[in-house]
Length: 183
Image (cartoon, rainbow, N blue to C red; front, side, top):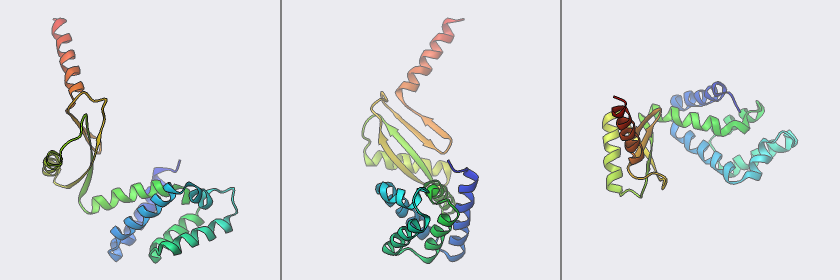
């Protein structure tokens, strides 16, 4: 696995260019699209990043893909820099960090909302508004259902976990009862 420090260095370098030319969001979309393509097309990802294949042929494949996607000159140069430095296989890690950095730049924070059952859009919007008010940032939420939860919701924003699940509430009640029995 790539060192987070190295991935951060590449992500910050791309962000610096994006800030300078005002194209940070464009680069995020291009990089995200390229990463998604590689995730969907594992053979292509292997053809570009596997060092067991001839480097010249891998570079030609990368060139063909970049041309077909019509990526910007900066993104094209960035991808070839990663290739030449032997870092192309770590593109997903770099993209993940770049996405976080551009979100910070745009005052956006990402949150995960997990619930036991499907939540109505109206309720999601209320939770999102409350989190935005609390954090002072625009909140983009990813909502998913986890049937192993008995009920309630668990929200995660960065390192902060807001656990309102029934399971956690029952565990707290159990611990409270056990403490009172010990007196």
